[in-house]
Amino acid sequence: MSDPAESNQWVLRIGHEELVVRQRYEVLSIGNDFLIALWFIIGSLLFFQESTATAGTWLFLLGSCELAVRPAIRLTRYVHLRRLRPPGLRGCDQDF
Image (tube, rainbow, N blue to C red):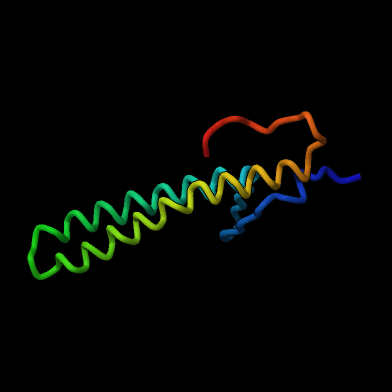
């Protein structure tokens, strides 16, 4: 019988290399956090020039909207774990 955890893996092949992602919700959360930081950094830099301030404002709005993605990832992970585990067992309490 196959391991359910293995069926939920993401495998990315790059040439002869293979990256196996087992904690996909954690990876999604980390990627989301990285993008949030990127939008706010670029948005901040765009505020140094008056001609690019509007673009900076849009990036701040994008970063703010993406902050809402974090709890959606956590909720999806929680619901997914509830379907995989019997009642009474909890997943990791780490805040992804």
